[in-house]
Length: 411
Image (cartoon, rainbow, N blue to C red; front, top):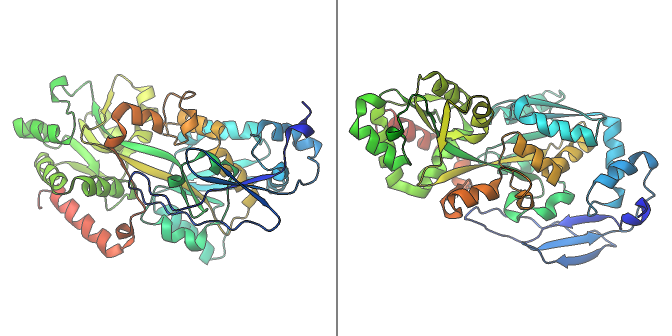
């Protein structure tokens, strides 16, 4: 079939309505239908609106091979974004992922768009926002895209600082993963209990938090100083892991934490540091450890690392991407965002240690959110939420103070 006959009129997808799934509370603002368009409702796993516009110009020869690799539901004039992105030539991302995590994604992206240089910085969960705001205030160049896992910051931040962009890939995502046409969740990283399986006896490997409490009470001297977790005052990831776990289990969770404090756990600002300390034997077990941080280390040292999904529940972080309103390379950022959300991109994320959320890749990857659901049961997954209380600085400070006091044995 000729390329010309393959492409239908340009398509832009719209997801409408207010849907609350799994207690997440993601509200979506409807996008107005452009004048002169035809609206068609499509029945899928969620309600979606398809907007068909008039066909644009003929696809230029130089972009036909790229367009041929994109799904048929991309707009026919998507080549215009590609053309503009080629002129921009680069895209800068402030993220919370390492170069190792990014590598398979950038490799695949550059196979499709070899003329776009992707530069990523591995920053803290809050640092991505602070650095962007300070640079913009100073009139300096800053990020084209921001990726973080900060439900306490994103909802307010995107109001003034994110570009509205309806990705053609939105049709493939449950509405709970899209916020206000500005923020797209692409990864749901679970937290684990990670342990040194060379040093921790099999009969001391806990099944979950209640079991860890039992083990500590049976042999407190063995565990003293051998458990690690987050200092939640220094990590948005750790703070939200702790908060949503305690929100689910309430007083019982506080009691578990109080009992774990008897082992005098040592805290750090990152899962990476925890994993390194566990590998050396300085600590034997960590909880609320990010699977993404563990995974590349596990591939290199499978004889050292063991992990479990706590039987009480698995807290899942929602990692999301947005294009900044001040982006110097907005079209290159659109290409990257669409690729991140695409089937090809989600498969690449899985190779980078992520937990991609797109449902239709489950049979093409070894790991995804669908795999996690099958392994632990959907009722045991504790999702982060865009919860209003965690946007209140005073509330967050009180929670931090109480949590750290209990963890240090003062609660």
